[in-house]
Length: 608
Image 1 (spheres, rainbow, N blue to C red):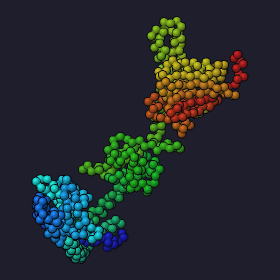
Image 2: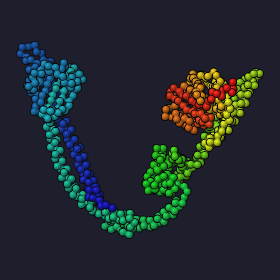
Image 3: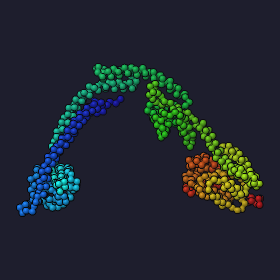
Image 4: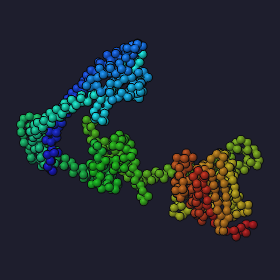
């Protein structure tokens, strides 16, 4: 261990604390004493001057009330000037008398006689005349670089303010005396600090010498040397501490041997475990991690030791260490990436003493990637089945309701509606089989049963079915060719594609919106487009909408019953037919799904 310098040693800290205590005590006493002294001197100074104000006020009122009609009576201004000259003192710089109209009636300053008869702009004077109260403040004079005290006092006559006394007094002498006292305190403080520092150094050396020996012993124990003993200097508290330290050394040596044996046993067990194990201290820092856990988390054992467990498990945003201590259930950790999937289940167990004190936390990691994958596929499958069966079930319900309301008695509608219900039932069976065969699409064993179909009536039939069963006020607009367009396709599979597209268009169309159907005849294929006026798809998500289980707006799609599989199934079916499918969209204006099918106009001759 590196030797501690004097300025970082406990001796220096002891001396510093000792000196600071004395300094703080002296400063507290000095500040309190000087503060009270300053307050008392200023108060005495002000009271001494204020005590003379009533006499001046009385004389002024006498002069104001005196009858000046006689010839021998001197003017009021001369009498006021005489009274002010008699009132002056060494500490008083100037005294002015102002009437209730803020006009200066007299001043004691010979050089300021020119302001007599003029209106004073002083705010304090005006407030005193208005409110009839004394006002004062201490100001600083930039010219003389000294402080002065300003006082305004009202002159009242029969309860009415008839004027004010404006007085300026030099108060700097009070502060000069206080500065002298402060200098005396500073000198005394410096002398006391010097003496205190010398005594503190001597005292600190006596106390820290045994502590220095114990520090050396602790360093030796940290290196595994338990044979060294601490020297006992006396029988005081520090001597007893040295004896206890020697006893502690002996007990630690015994505990070290026992702990080392247990550690080897635990290390052997952890090394051969198939699950990952992480242990922490009471602050949540990692103190143990086995090879399996390091392999699962793809970390190095050396780098994660002493790191917070929440950072290692990447839970710092959702959990604190206290949350993990209180967690009763397993925590699922998803470390999947685009290249690989890894899902772990973390079970936590608190390490507690018999007294209930928490020593740390044990986290056991299980690899449940395959299990979670099977569960997810099962949930997605059930959700997809519900989504795909929704449309035919709705159609059947509509026709059956019509039959139950009396349509069955109609010789034309009854058999027709029953036929539709039967057809929808059969199509549901085929849809279930298609969903069960979805996994075969990836193995390229997926096949269709194509036949020649006049595409325009085929599309109109699907649109009619949706127009009859729709529950929202959405208009259908058809821009379809009038001539026959025969295309080789699997009628059931393509019905499934168009059903998915129309269902999505209805879901996201606003009330009163329009869904537009277009069919264009091109050179070697037909282009079918279905447009809505819904919320649209963000530009960055257009390429992803055909991915399996992908949803642009998960919350809204879940609310409307979607699974994110319909367009993926459509893409697979269109691909098997030899066509292509894509989307165009603008946020806030709507979405268009476009797909193509191979088309050979020459084949129409066989059907005409």
